[in-house]
Length: 445
Image 1: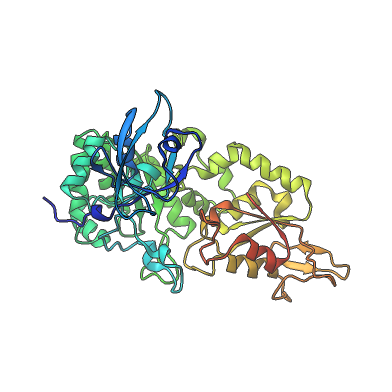
Image 2 (image 1 turned 90 degrees about the horizontal axis):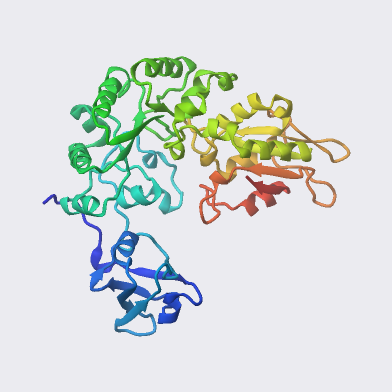
C-alpha cells in the first residue's frame, strides 16, 4: 500500500446548498444547510460517491441537521426518471487533494505576495480531473484511490506528463515523479483513457527529449490526445526563458509537423511564430479534431474565428462608436490583424502585474486595466474622447471627466475569463471597481 496522504474521510461534509420545491428531497424534508453523512451506510467522500450510490429509487440517508446535535435517518424516495432535486455546496466533501511535487514550471510558485490565499493552493486531485478537466500528475495517488478510479470507470482523465525520461522527470517534477508513470501505466492497462499535456521548457524537455516522450505516447493508444503548451513565467520566476521569440516558436512548429503530426500545439506558438500574420498560418479546424484540448488553450483562436463570438463582437464594434475592446497582448495582436479597421478601438493590456511572458486575457488584472486604459485616453476641449492604440506622451494618470464627473468613454468590453465564479479579478477587484475608476460602462463578453 502506497503511503501517500489521504483525503480526510472522517470529516467529510456533504452540505446541501439547494433543494428544489416539490422534489423528492423536498418531500422527504431535506432543507438547505443539512449535511448528508452517508447513503445506505456508506460515507460520502465526494459528489462521485453520491452519483454512484444514488442511482436507486429509494435511499436511506444519514442526515446531520444543524438544529439537532445527533444525526438521524431519513428515507428518500422517487419515481422512475425523477431527479432527487438537491444540490451540494461542494463537489469534494472530504477536502482537496493537493500537490506533492516540486515542479520547476509551477505557476503557483511564481505569484507575487499579497494575493488571496486560494490562488496559491496547488490542487492535484484526480476527481477534479474527471469532473472539470483539470490536469493532474497522478503522483499523489494511493493504491486504494487507483483502484477506485478503475472500479468507478473514471474516464477520461487528464494527465500532466511533460517528459518520460526518469532523470528529467525528477528534475522537472521532483522526487515523486516515478509514481505518476507507474499509476498511468496501471490505469491504461485497465482501459482508463487520458488526454496528456506537455509543458514545454525551452532547452529542457524539447528537441530529442520531446521526440522520446511523444514516441512513448504514440505506443499507448489509451492516450487519446496530446497537447503541447509553452512554459509561462512571471517576473518572480527563477527560470525566465521560454519560446518567446518568433525563431524559437517557428522552429518548434516545423519540428512538430515532421515528428508528430497528430500532436496539437497551443495557440501561443503560432502567435509568437508569425507576429502580425498568424491568421495566414493558423491550422484549420480539422487539425484540432473536435477541439479536445480547447480548455488548455489549444484551438481557441480557430474556434473563435469560425464561431459566432467573433461576429457578435464585430456587431458591437459596428453599432457603438465609443466602445473599446480590452484584452491581453496575445489576443490583442490577433484582433489588430483580424480587424485592422478597428485597431484604434482594440487595446491590448500589458501584464505588468505578473510580468515575465504572461500575455493572456485570463490573467489580466484590474490594476493593469485601470492604469493602461487611462493612459490611452485623450480628451479634447469639448470633452470628447479619442481612443488611442498606443500610450501618448502627456498621458493623464486617470480618465478625464467633464464638469459633471462623467467620462467620455461609453463602453469597455472586457473578457469574462479574467473574472472567477465570484466575480473577482486576480488582484481581488470586481467589475464595479473598474467601472468606477474609469467612469465607464463595462460589458463582459
